[in-house]
Image 1: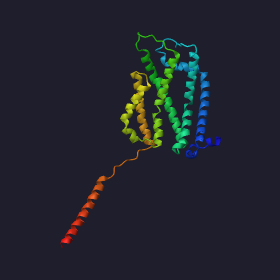
Image 2: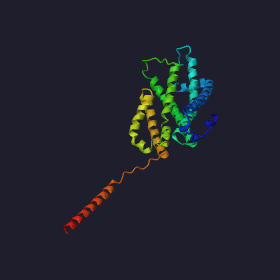
Image 3: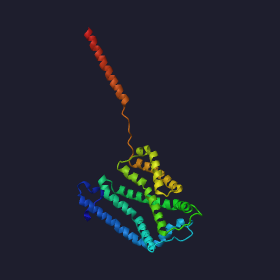
Image 4: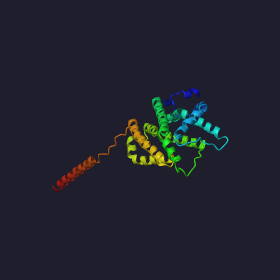
Length: 282
């Protein structure tokens, strides 16, 4: 098994590999990801206070009290979730690599340059989406949500509820920003091209708006803040598709020339018939 794992991605023959070998390789890759995830989570446990303060920072202007907890075990469970969340963030590039390394041989020869480009693009886009959400959208969203109904409601926000909201919010933006990476793969496999994406640009704008509405809380600021980057990323995806898989020029058949050719043949046949009739008369 060890020798098989060292074979380059493009050299593995999936058609001849038995199902049990596929499952064995999948188990090995999941095991590698799991080991790294556990190690990253353990290291993150020792920095849980810094992670907590980092995620709490966007709410400093709207929260004038310490987060509450309503269960005896809530503090330690919340810190445990923070460590797991941080471990997941650190492990994501490896998850992307192992997932692609497993499926790549089934879709043809790609090479390691393409693999490393894809992993770098996907990881950068995910981190970019999380950073955009944290530095550009999160503070505005919290101000809107926590400031709603000022004077009519009393804020009692628990630590687990707040951190659960923040982590889901950041992850949603990170996943949403993966559109160019998905386009890169689709264009490389010949599934999409720039012409196809330009044709359905209006539909994509509507879909992006719906995705932004579903991912973000029910308030317009964060919806617009996510919808605009998604639309821009779609335009970037069109450019990527055009560079990776240029749309072949599609030309309509030259029907006019064919019609003229057929008309000329009909005229020649008519002339021959006329000549035959004239001979018969003579």
